[in-house]
Image (cartoon, rainbow, N blue to C red; front, side, top):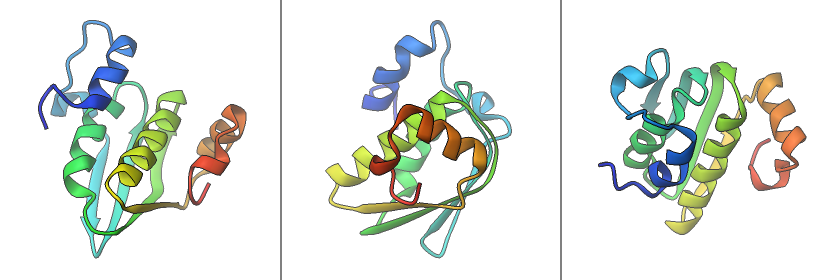
Length: 121
């Protein structure tokens, strides 16, 4: 997806002077197989923009399962990314569910009070 992604636009104010590229997601990867998408590596301000674009192409089908057991680090940008994925799935008539959230992600989600908005949290 090009630079016209609605998520890139919404996050642009958080990333002044930074352009998304594969090098920006060093350490963050998505492994998609059998209808399940496993995220490995950090979900931070440095990685979310490229991940938002990449998953939009990968998240297909009526049911999307995202395994977060491989997340090594998370910050508030990770919570925003999960919410963006939920919003995008809903807009496309799909259901998304997050699995295996680590304690750091659960704490951030609770801190921001958005647990009811994130399936599986």
